[in-house]
Length: 427
Ligand code: HEM
Figure 1: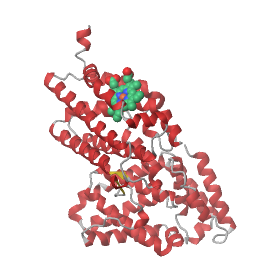
Figure 2: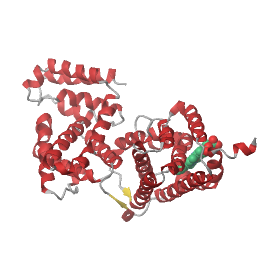
Figure 3: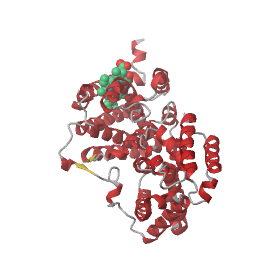
Figure 4: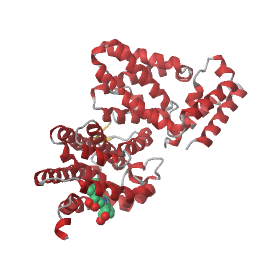
């Protein structure tokens, strides 16, 4: 009986990686987490590193030809999605990136990408290690909640994982993994991949805490202050022109931008659109996490995430028109559009979303005769963002939209009522 068990993939994985698991648990990162002294920067950089790993894994295996890998990943909800939700919540805090962590995380992502081409079945080793974190995260969830004052809906989605469905999930996962009949050589490669994955995570966690000196941290594209205006811009002038046109179209769709932010808003939409264009050179999961980060920052400052969704739609269209030979690259932006859209409609379905907007339009004389068109969708979207854990999303918009010096009383009460109604139906 014992002999049979020892041939099972999960048994071997567990037994052979146990010393690595133990070594990782003993890292100062986890001691600090348990003691409640882990700095927020360590936590946020951990989320970013896992987002790079899970995002790459989930993306690379989606189209892959290896059914076993697909089947195991499909057994549970996307953990990349959980990580993106957390990234959105911390965006506004402007937390710098730990350079060494990013280097190890990029190396891990690159290795996952290579294996997905050269030896996809060995990715089962990576999946084992990465998905195994649902168990350890469960242990540390209370520490995360206590230390950072967060919960599953505002910054701890990754640690919450599958919540009370965890044991069902893990049983399914174990059974699936054990159902694959890996011959000796294949099992050996899966085990080697699991060792590798633990190695990367060991390096990442060793660099996460204690935090490095200031020159070991940087504001790069995932963390820079969008107000600083030092974005990368595309080298191709045609792309810059397309980005500027898309910014203009977005501002026309939402006159709120010009009314509220004036010239400064114009500069930002132009530079944001230009920066978004440079993202098309990245792999899709990296594009999505960057977009989620920036849209979270902007939502906290009064620009609900629906504006990013629309901006990307315009940008995709304009870029495709202007530089058609790069259409394939531009199509990668659509992954971010659909992530944002799904995330918005997760809280308020499209029918209810539209009816809330219609009611606002009716109450405000067609949004002040069109002068403030599409404000309704900004308001309802801000409530969806708030529900996603972006705490400042509604206050960032409401105060300006209900300023009695700017708007009449009917408008101001329609804004408040719509917010209250949207909050009451949001799930
Ligand atoms: C990056 C860090 C970590 C990784 C990659 C990781 C990975 C894993 C994996 C792959 C498993 C599945 C083991 C199995 O085959 O049953 C597991 C289980 C587990 N991990 Fe971790 N882990 C990490 C950190 C931690 C930490 C810090 C703790 C602290 C308490 C922890 C506690 C657990 C527990 C309690 C289990 C369940 C073990 C059991 O059922 O006997 N893990 N982890």
